[in-house]
Amino acid sequence: MGDIIKFPTHLRRVANKYKQEEIAHIAQMLKLCDDDMQCIVEQIEQLNLELKALTNEYETLLEKLKKLTDEGNND
Image (cartoon, rainbow, N blue to C red; front, side, top):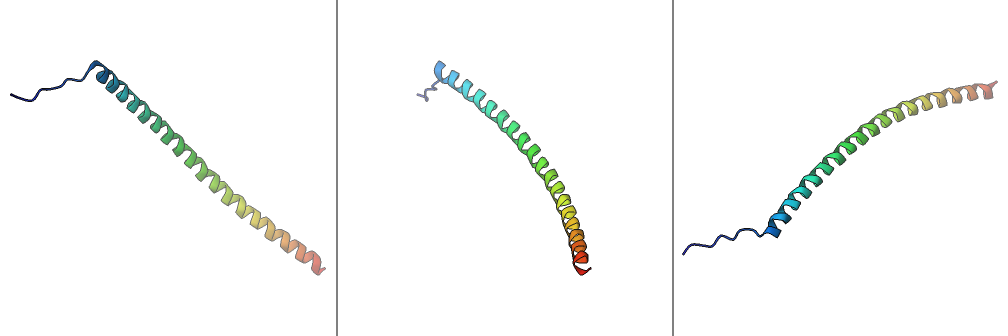
């Protein structure tokens, strides 16, 4: 005699259906998280560029102030 094929029970079919729905839901949530993280990375990169520009401006102003105070001390 051949092997007996066991069909899934009603409960197992329902559980598999919910499992597949949960997998799809988690995949969708992961996609949304990935999109949010990408947006945040882009914002961080933009802030980094602005910070570099402000740092350069600060250093320029500090150098001018140093020159002016040095000139004032020499007078």
